[in-house]
Amino acid sequence: MVSFLTGAAIGAGLALLFAPQSGEETRKKIKDIGDKVSDEVKGSYDKVTHEAQKAIDSVKTASDKAIGQIKTFIDGAKEGIKKEVQAEVKEAVKAAPKKKA
Image 1 (spheres, rainbow, N blue to C red):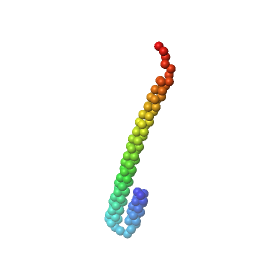
Image 2: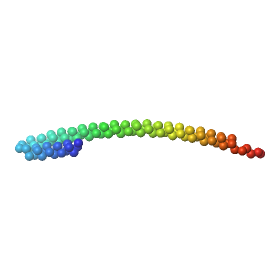
Image 3: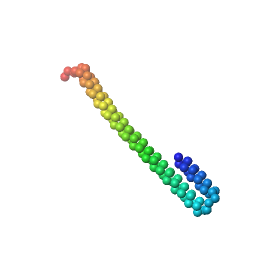
C-alpha cells in the first residue's frame, strides 16, 4: 500500500512538472499532493499499528489462558503421581517380611 501511494505521488509530481503552469502553481500542487500522500500514509500506518496491537493482545490473552491450563494440568498430574507413589510404598511396606528383633 505504501509503495502504491509513493508511486502515485511520484507519478503525480512528474505530471505536474511537465504540465504547462507557472513554477509557483506547480510547487503549490506538488506540496498539496505531498501533504495528501503523507496524511494517507500516516493514516494507513496508524491503522496497521492498531490492528497489529489488537492481534498481539489477543495472542497474549490466549497464551496466558493456555499457560494457566497447562499449570493446572501439571499440578493435577503431580498430585496423582504423588498419591500413586504413596499407595505403592504402603503396599510395599505391607508386603515386606517383618524382621524379628
